[in-house]
Image (cartoon, rainbow, N blue to C red; front, side, top):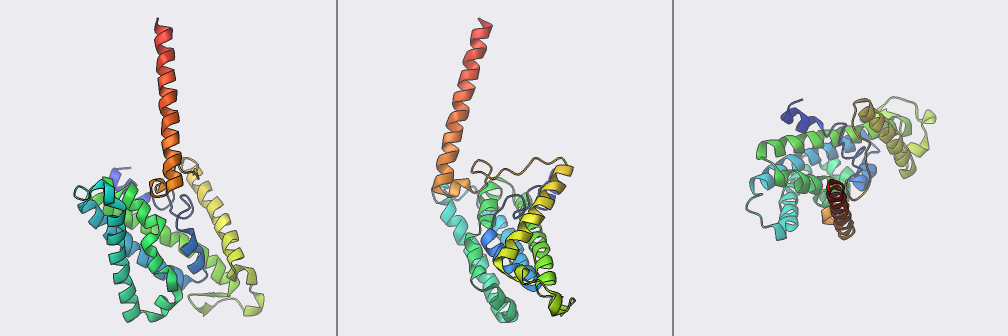
Length: 244
C-alpha cells in the first residue's frame, strides 16, 4: 500500500481513534445514543480535524516549540467556533443535541493528538489526508455505537421507529449500555485488526499520541527513554567484552 492510502485508511481500523487509540471517550459516549447526534458530531470533528491539520502543518516551521500547544489550541478553537456558529444558524436542533460537547472539541484528545503526532511533522497534503481519515474513522465508530444503542434502546434509527417501544431495552439508552456496546465493538475492531496482521493496541503512555500533553505521561515517557538508553549502553558494553 502506498503512503497516501496508508495515511488515509489508518484511522479506519489500524488506528481508529475510539476503538484502537481509546481517545475522546467522554464526548463519544455522551452523544452516541442517537444516530443523528453521532452524525452531527462526526461531521463536526471531520471539519475541525481536516482544517486544523492543514493550518498547523502549514505553520509547523513557524510556530516556536515552546508555544506549540497553545498555538494548536488557538487554531482548533477558531474552527470549532465556526462549526458552532454554522450549527446555531442552520441546524439548531443538532446544536442542542450536542450541547456542551460541541465546544469541548477544542480539547478533544483526537484533535490535539493528530496535531501533535502528525500534522506538526508532515506536509499539508498528508496532514489533510490524515485528518480526513481519522475523522471518518471516528464517525464510523460513533455511528456503530449509536446504531446499536438507538435501535435496541429506542427502537428507532434516525428518528424513524423500527422496533415497537415495548420491545426496546432500557439499558442501551443509559451510560451503562454505552460502555457495554463500546466494549463489544472494541473487541470486534481489535479482532479485525488482528486478522489484518495489525499489532495489538497498547493502552499506555508510551503508545499514546498525546502523552507529551499531560504531565504524568511526559514523565513516564522520559523514564521509558532513560531505561531504553541504559539497556542500549549495557548491550554495547557486553558486545565490547565479547569482542575482546
